[in-house]
Length: 83
Ligand SMILES: [Zn+2]
Image (tube, rainbow, N blue to C red; front, top):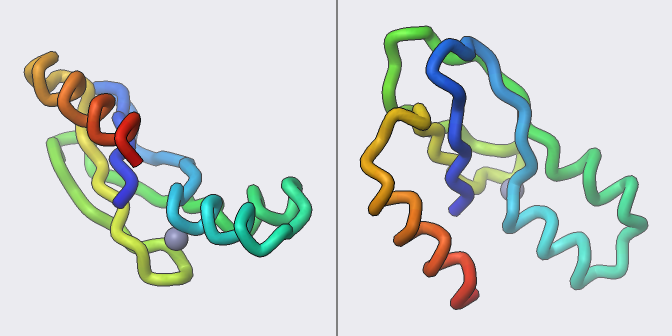
């Protein structure tokens, strides 16, 4: 699962799906093609704090406004480091 931090005033986002990037890397796909395949864009209402989207391959992407407790972000970073 990918977590994307959205700035407080943003109403759209663009990010990369981490599982898609990993799969493309494992399959030996060209990096530029991997980036295109993992790219996810969308819109987010200004008053939405947390939302989720799916990439083209169906992986969940969680969108969070940056105005969250710092401890949440630290936990996410540790989880990512363990993968
Ligand atoms: Zn994906």
